[in-house]
Length: 147
Image 1: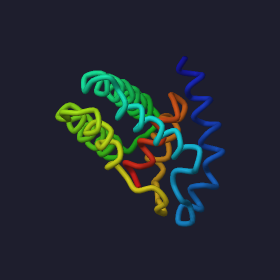
Image 2 (image 1 turned 30 degrees about the horizontal axis):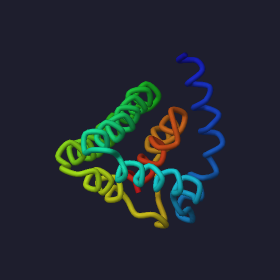
Image 3 (image 1 turned 120 degrees about the horizontal axis):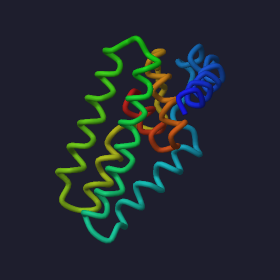
Image 4 (image 1 turned 45 degrees about the horizontal axis):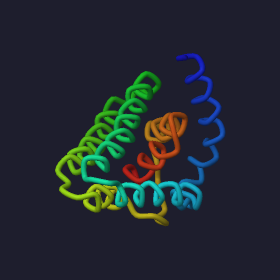
């Protein structure tokens, strides 16, 4: 499993190397990623209860925590890992404090601005890539948290 993750991360990192060089010209996330993120927000807002919305949201946050844990084995910059954890913890606290499905969805709507030009450092790119290896939403969450 670790070898597979490392290979996938290396392949994605190599594919993203040109992105890092072009970071000042990038709009993040792309249209497909935006659509997936918007679909997730809509799903949260339409959940049958606040508890169901929280359960859905916390599952994606947990997956994102796993991405950070896996990325920490590949990144030597402990401060980047700590920043990622702190930002994700803030999102999690907001979800837990939400009283309605719409408030849960709003927590995700507030984590970043679509269409902005983003600059990611190497550690952030590794975390984003590992997030995408685990699923599109963790990758998009990190793109927005770091932008």
